[in-house]
Image 1: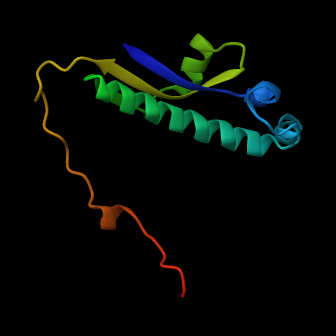
Image 2 (image 1 turned 135 degrees about the horizontal axis):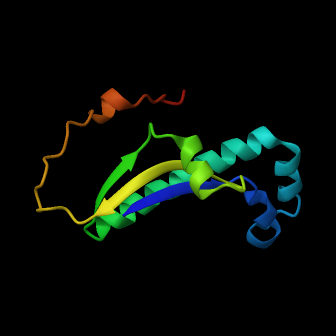
Amino acid sequence: MTVLVARDTRFYEWMPTLWHAPDARDNFERKPQLAHETAVRNATLTGAYLIMAARTLGLACGPMSGFDAAGVNRSFFSDGRWEVDFLVNLGYPASPSSRPRAHRLAFAEASRWHEPAT
């Protein structure tokens, strides 16, 4: 199956129900760029949790970007409230070792950190 990981562009309308800060909704309504950045980040994080959970259940996951997002939005989210973030193909692998894991960068190659001054 293919999952469309999408974001609710007006997620902040749910803030009075889901969040304890009484002015959170108004804050996002006044700051559309902040609302967009928050929606994108949270949709991506939620999609990552979906992938982790699916892999825990033994499913193979193929996350995808580089697709026609405007076309997906027209086809599935024509009212404009939702926008696709990325796609994930989910299924059972043909065999336990259907494809070897690709090379990964070492932690030191993929990250930078700063030691606090003492």
